Length: 67
Image (cartoon, rainbow, N blue to C red; front, side, top):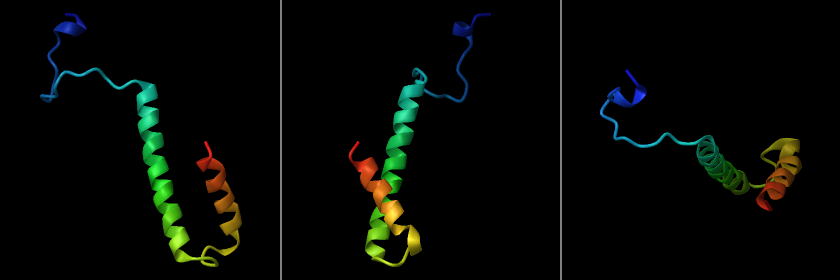
């Protein structure tokens, strides 16, 4: 029996599987959204709330936003 003749299970509509590049793009978009939300949260908290790492974290975010 070939793979083509095997019925799909679970009633899922027939659609091609996502390629690796598409999966990575979706994950990167989700990560970017999470990081943006975290950055907004930290900005709203004001200076001095994050200890000594504020300058390092802010520099990393600004560096990544330019890409």
